Amino acid sequence: MENAVIGLPRINEPAPDFQVNTTHGPRSLADYKGKWLILFSHPADFTPVCTTEFIAFAKAADQFKAMNCELLGLSVDSIYSHLAWMQSIKQNFGVEIPFPIIDDIKMEVARAYGMIHPGAADTQAVRATFFIDPESKLRAMVYYPMTNGRSIDEFLRLLKAMQTSDAHKVATPEGWTPGCDVIVPPPKTPQAIEARKGEGYAMKDWYFATKPL
Image (cartoon, rainbow, N blue to C red; front, side):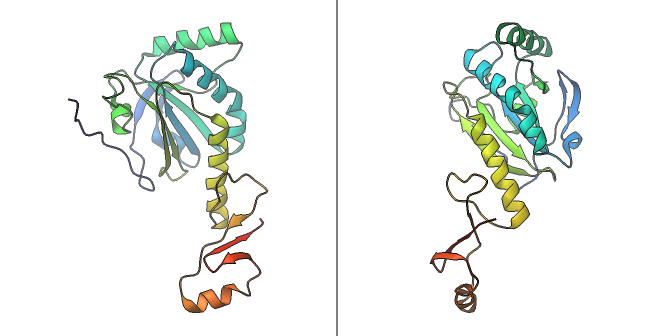
């Protein structure tokens, strides 16, 4: 159906549950409780753009782990296809894939997370990436077209920004990286606006104030 409505999960709501088979054995959403999880889909095994993404995720896996974040890949291919592709990547690029890849032949997870877009392909998951926090809430979603690879450096940056916002109750400006100033919440009453002037923040206007961490 060309006009099929694609259901999408919602940010700050519980992430759709799953119990799946992977290249590392059975996995469920509950297994990641207490950790961040990046769940990411790719259109198909043995495709060039996906191969570059998996290599980049693999090389950054230790950085994600140091930030209490696990990686979990997905496509609608079988376990056997995933394993063969992993071997191909190791043989041809010298890179081992350290994270599990979901076997989603029935497209149950892909559909629950809105990864199947009929306008892109009938049975392929688009390049969707989901950030799930330690309380199993969905915190961010990023979609890319099939023709263009994702930036893993941006995902590292975004994860750090969200963790910083959680820890310090602040927001982060465009392109924020650790060491840059953060944005403090704007005041919500006239009295708070007056008080803000003496709070020691760098202010551009009453609603725009920053501070170093």
